[in-house]
Amino acid sequence: MNILVTGGAGYVGSVCAAELVRRKHRVITYDNLSAGVRRAVLPGIALVEGDIADRKKLERVLRQHHIEVVMHFAASALVDESIRNPSLFYRNNVSGTLVLLDAMLATGIKRLVFSSSAAVYGEPTQVPITEDHPTAPINAYGETKLVIERALAWYHRAYGLNCVALRYFNAAGAVGTLGENHRPETHLVPRILDVVFDARQPFQIYGDDYPTPDGTCVRDFVHVRDIARAHILAMRKLAKLGLAVYNIGHGRGYSIREVVQTVEAVTGAKVPIVTAPRRPGDPAVLVASPEKIGRELGWKPKEDLTRIVRSAWLYHRQKRLQKGNHP
Ligand code: UFG
Image (cartoon, rainbow, N blue to C red; front, side):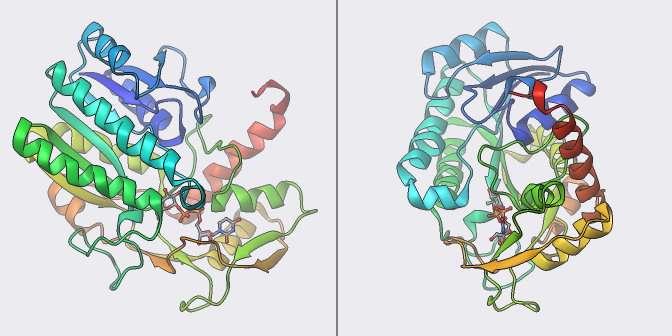
C-alpha cells in the first residue's frame, strides 16, 4: 500500500510509519515540523515538509505518490494548551483536517485512519468507557477531535469516505530510538523520568484530592507500538468497516502514584514528589473498554505498564547520553 502519514515526524506518527515500513508498505510522511522532529523519520522513509492547511501541496503529494490510504496524526495535542489557546486547536485540528479531507476527495482517496482521543468523552459517567459512552469533552482538544469525528460520519454518508477513528487513551513508551520528545514535555512518564535523571526538582502531582482510591488521577496507559498495530489492523479493514470508532486502551487504569512507583521499581531510583494544584481540563479517571476493537479487529495490547516504563526509560537514557547530537 502507498500510505501518507501526516504528523509522521511526531511521537505516535513516527512509530506507526516505522511499523508500516517494516511491514513492507510504502510510506510518505508529511509534517510541518512544528512539533515533530526530522530525526524521528527513520532513514529510508520519505519526509515531505508541509502543512495540512496547504491544500495544493497536499494534493500534489497525494497524486505524485499514488497514495491509497491516509493516516492522520498531525494535530495539536496538549490538553492544557488547548484550554489556554483554543484558536490553535481549531485551526490545526479542525480547519487543517477539513483541508486534508478535501484534498483526499479531490484526488479520489477514500480511506482514512484518524487519530482521535479519549478526550472526546470528558468526565466519564461510567468506567471502563465503551465507545457508546456519551461524548462531552471538557477541553478544547477533545472538542476538536469530536468535531472531526462527526464530520467524518457526514463525509462517509455523502462522499463514501471510509474512515476508522481510533480514540487513544494515554499513549506512552518508546520503540528503540522513537519516543516522546515534546517541547515542552508535559506528559506523565517523561516528566517522572526527568526527575529520575535530575532529582533537584521533585515530581509534581497535579492534584491529590480527586475522587479516586489514592486521590490522584487514574489513566489507562497504552504502548505506542500497540497503538501502531491498531492502526494497521484498522487500515486492513477500512473498506469493509466503512465508518467505525474504537477505543485503544488496556481496560486497566493506574493512578499517578502507581505510575511513580512503577518508575521507581524499573529504574531503582527514588522519585521525590510534591502535590501541586489540579491541572485544568483533567478528568479524574479515564479507563477504556477495549472490548470492541478486540472483538472486531482482533487487537489486544501486548505491553503492560512495566514494559511501557522500561522502554521509555531506555529511550530517555539514550537521548540524554547523546544530548549533544539532538536538535
Ligand atoms: N500529571 C501530573 N504531573 C505531571 C504531568 C502529568 O500529575 O507533571 C498527571 C496529569 O494531571 C494527568 C496524568 O498525569 O492526570 C496524565 O497526564 P498527561 O499529560 O501525561 O496525559 P493526559 O491524560 O493529559 O493526556 C493524554 C494525551 C491526550 C489524550 C489523553 C486521553 O496527551 O491527547 O491522554 O487520556 F487526550
